[in-house]
Length: 84
Image (tube, rainbow, N blue to C red; front, side):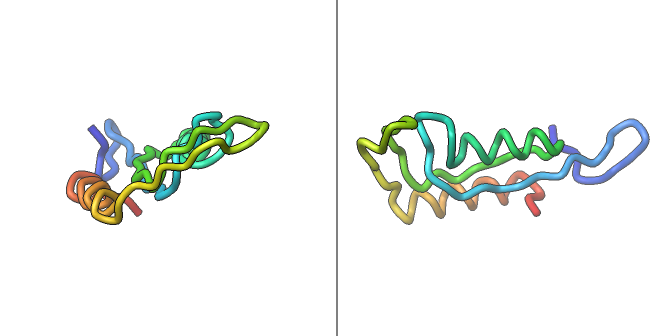
């Protein structure tokens, strides 16, 4: 469980939301954002705007998420996490 307030026994863990595409090659998008959040001690949440088929040599396909799907993801995150 992510703590919303800080105490001696339960330190505050900041929460961030990334809104981006998913990079199947792992070098960009949601995957890179979540690694960056983790490196800085931030709990990462996400809303995925597109699924991509890509690697370092190129992007082969992009399947966008509907605006309604992205909105639902964002609403779900904010309903449960103190993202800032």
